[in-house]
Structure formats: C-alpha cells, structure tokens
Length: 254
Ligand code: MG
Image (cartoon, rainbow, N blue to C red; front, side):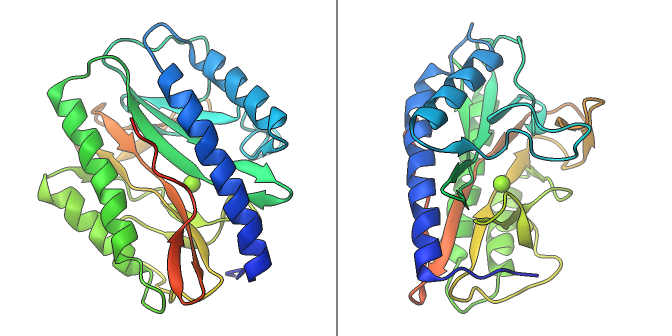
C-alpha cells in the first residue's frame, strides 16, 4: 500500500534529504585508495549523529542479520548492499556509497558511485552512463503521469550503450520507512501507479557492464553481478508536491 505524505511530512523528508546530501558532499572526497570502507562508515556514523540524525540503514533488515553500517559500500562487481569492512579501496575501484538518514522520523535515501583514483575508461563510461540513466529517469518523472515512464527512460538510456540492467532490485517508496511501496523498477514492468501529490520515491538505476543478472553473497547482504563485471549505482529521492516533481536530494559534484 502506498502511503502518501502531506506537505508538512514532505518538508520533514526534504530536510532529511538535504542533510544526507550535505554528508555526501563531505564524504565523497574521502573515498580514495588506501582508505578502508569501515573508516568511511565510522566517519558517516559520527557525522550523522553530530548532525542530529540517525543512520537509517544501521540495524535494518532481519533481526538475525541486521545491516551493520550507516553506509552500503559496494566495490566494482558489487552492485548494492556491500558491508563496510577492513577492505581498503584500491586505485581504479568503482565505489558505490548508498545511505539514508532518519531525521525526526523522516527517511532520506541517496547513492553515488565514486571513482577511486584513476579508473579504466570502461569503468568511467559505465559510471557516467549510470548517472545519465538516473537523470533520464528524473526528467521522465511528471506529476500526474505514470511511474513506469521513469523505468522506461532508465532502460532506454542504459540500452543505448548496451549495458545490463539489474531488475531483481529496484527503487521504492521512502519517507516513513527505508523501503515502502511502490516499487520503482529500472525496466517498465509491474504496477504502474500515477505520480500523485504526496508520493515520495527513491529512483536508483543499477547498471552493469555485462548482463544484469545478480547473486547474493553468503553474508546475506552483498549483491554482486553473476558474471563478475562492473556495476554502478546512482540514486535520488523525489517527491510529488504542489502538482510538480521535486528532487529532494541534491547533485553531488565529483
Ligand atoms: Mg534506495
């Protein structure tokens, strides 16, 4: 069931999103060869707490295997939900950071993929195209129109360059919880609600250099490409309010 938000609630989510983007602006320059993903996660935990928020992803999921970090950090063939660890980022890695903040009960969600040091031309092209998939999806989001317009735009941009699209995971409603209805797939399949006032969704293309097939690692979280090829992931949270679409999270210059 889709839980629409009123203007006051959207304002709460907007503030949460602005805070999250402020964190991304500060943490992305720290994503460099030699830094461990656990260091980045500890930095984010401290930053979010100091700003008066709570890390929305920390403790998320099943009680017997809750997500242990404030950030999902997914490197190279890892697509999403990578667990922070002692692994050090290496020159040329594609490092996806995904995070959410709970600010006064309002949840935000954003992801960026950072190029650590100098990456291969192929990795850079994949990353740039994935970011363009997100932009295309956001441009296609029109108040009163159907949700799968977004999915169609993402798919078209990805197919232009022959990239794979992860369809087993997708974007989602957000705001009161980390994951709500509706699903926001990256191909136009499934329920197709209208983008009515009060809808708040996260749009998050997950694009791969090979096929879009993925598998889950034994840690119960990390999703990797089945063929081991690179993946990139970009995400914004948007709201429909006052008869228009507003992207609540902000662009991060990289
Ligand atoms: Mg998300």
